[in-house]
Amino acid sequence: MTTAHMEHTAHDHAHGPNCGHTAVEHGDHVDYAHDGHLHREHDGHYDECEPSGHVEHAGHDHVHGPDCGHEAVQHGDHVDYLHDGHRHAAHNGHYDDH
Image: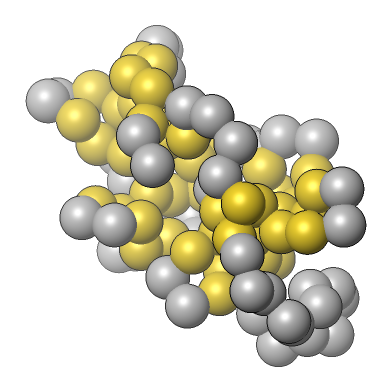
């Protein structure tokens, strides 16, 4: 999965372990859930960390919801669930990897 490079401009908040935002392990970096977006530090600025394309998480037999035991993170107009180092979002009868 590739990630599009979309700089989050006018970001005056420094993310880190004690910044108050949920940290999400995402491949080789950490994203921070902030105002419905996922931010990652990149070359002295923050990017919107969004996948470029549709990536289905195949073979997912777990149903996510308010009591599933996985942390929920608001992501735009939907909720992602943090599961095994991935962000899962319900989509047309399956889960996408975000």
